[in-house]
Length: 338
Ligand code: PEP
Ligand code: MN
Image 1 (cartoon, rainbow, N blue to C red):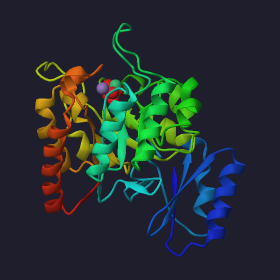
Image 2 (cartoon, rainbow, N blue to C red):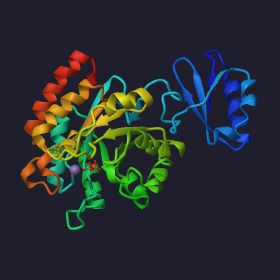
Image 3 (spheres, helix red, strand yellow):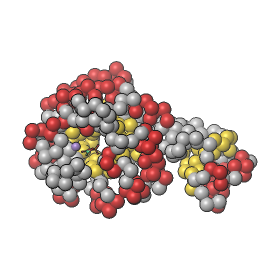
Image 4 (cartoon, helix red, strand yellow):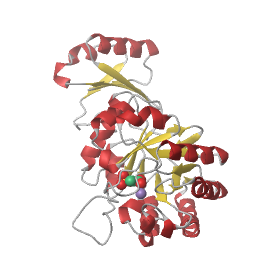
């Protein structure tokens, strides 16, 4: 249930409602928009005494959010969410390009990519140190040594770090090095991990499971938000269908669908969606045109030598070509690319 306050509601009216919600054992979530404030009450709606809230000063309307996700829904937060990472913004009017290798392999590899991204004035580097590989015999990542390499080069080149955390147990360790926690597709329904990330003070890049419906994806975001962390970036990375020509099927339709029902930023991972560098450009261009808020792309100094996902990784030259095309489209769409 959400309480919508009138534009001229006083701060003390909102405080009063918040206290009342807490007094009956529910959790209030405040969303301050440009025009009005909304206070969400999560829990079993039937147990909330609606008539008591109806009478409160400042309350203009009470709405029941019919979707199973509440805090992630547009009803609760009508404006698009903009996420601040250090001084950089993700969402609404900015198109964020995050790039870097699938796995952190050594300091030279990461340094080459970090310097390259800085030369393009990009702001975010990705790289996995804890890798969720389908086979236990594949390269599993460098662990904390990899995080140190990533942090070091990111700091040298003014970049923010995006890296994956595989389990709730590693949240504290990964949090010492990263600016954004990535939750991989295979962990989208690792609820213990989602809850742990709901208690950190850094944004979460939540990838859609290859088997999840949009509704399940948003419910996973809800797990994080319910614990108090509303800085969730949704990442579509392809779903599994009957088609095997590409590694996964990029669900471009998820962009407008999510944007209709949720206020959270949506970014696309064309690398894992397509699984082959040949298709990364068209998938990226389609994504910006369809209204995505950004991309996360795998780039490797020498894709043929990559320890993971070389086939889908762009070389720096190929990435540069793509970036030029994205810049052209961003001008037409009047989006600030960064
Ligand atoms: C990755 O980003 O390298 C990765 C493993 O992605 P996903 O979880 O989408 O498969
Ligand atoms: Mn990868």
